[in-house]
Length: 284
Length: 312
Image 1 (cartoon, rainbow over the protein chains, first blue to last red):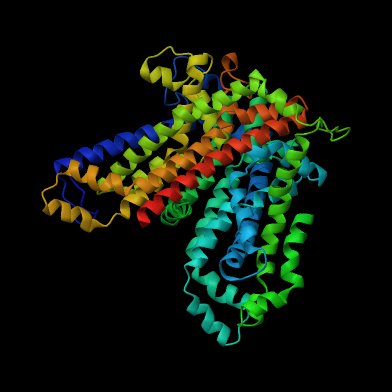
Image 2: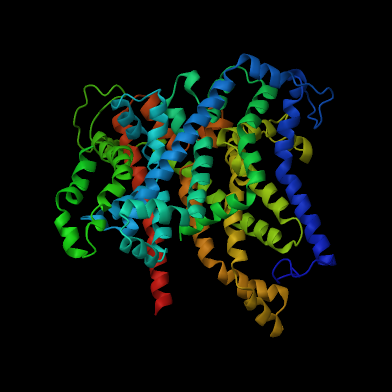
């Protein structure tokens, strides 16, 4: 606690800094330990994985669990399904929530106030709260066990509209006015001036939507029974857990589901951190 | 669908109004079209299920959707006398009560740590946030494995014999520990961003006045973090009340030892999809929606009061 000054103004190894760095290292080790344990388990044979007493490193390293997973299960299908669903959800959400956020922030139409209130009320609705009636709705539309059924209900996030609405309100009107005087229409102004200006906000919404959709379990779990259509989180939780869990394989599958986002995070850390802070802080 | 069409109609049929208000001309009349795609999806997948849920809750509908009969408030009467519903509500509330303070305090401490260590901030950020990137089911499986009394690492490392997932008094705390590890990174990032946005000159001024590190933390940092704490607590309460994924995964999709971890969401899904009582499941969903909405509105009300106070 010796350093309430902003970071980077001092770089000396003071005793305080040494203690804090050691502490941070220890805490990080605690956070990483479960993941390391999962990784080491996936590199053990199934019999060694359940051996008592528990031990960290495999006595005999083997890629057998990973190989079995890729050879036998439908994990590659799940991976592709996850990718299709997340990419579709992210694209649709970006498009519709940017348009709606702009519409609410910058255009006028009858009933705007009421509609905005309605969208705000949508912040309180999720598949966890209204899963059963949402399922019957999707059932009526004939979308159970389809990609559409998994994708479309994830495409109406009131929170993202609200975040972009707040952002668009902050763009100086003069920029748009100048373009209008030059004869550009609303749509042209939106796509050539507003969208490029909002790249960081759109990136935040996109990243956040992708993470949420890639990891979404509850809704795909409710709407799919066909193992060929399942996404990673759903397939791992339901199919791999259903008959005699094979822990080494389960850990390998879990890592396969988690790794893409972790790799992306390592490379785009700055943008993602800014994005999470941005989307979260907009909630104020 | 009707909802979307009626709400959009004014923008299409009466552009004259928009024109009259905004002399800028035709550029303002397309507002309805900007919001149309979102509102269509929103109407079908949010508003309609809400309306349909209220409607179904007044019927004895089953999962096939046939032979639904209007039965008035019978479902609600039954719900209020249903001990399983109250148990499920209690479990979700218990989870919330345990998880929210732990997550908030730990997130704050981690953010303070990462903020004050001058070197390797990207590394601490990566380590603390990484678990959040895992799917809920993967994190759940991982901890189910870690908590295994014989072959798991938790008992081995701490030299315990605790039957974490098979004893009613340990099951929920085990789920809370898993949740803490899995989700604290998100609140941590919010706190870190808030810490970094506190103006440095406040600290410099306090230092000149002879305030020590502890005093600066108590008198500058903590008050400056009030808003973000409100946000973190509110988001965590809303998310925690809706806990489902990790609980069912860690309990093999069952209700836990002595039914001690059956959450509210789990109970509604069991009633709807296992017992096929869609009408009844809708009724308890509506009750749940009212609870969630009450929490959200309470927060808005608190926030408004505070801004009004600040404005005075």
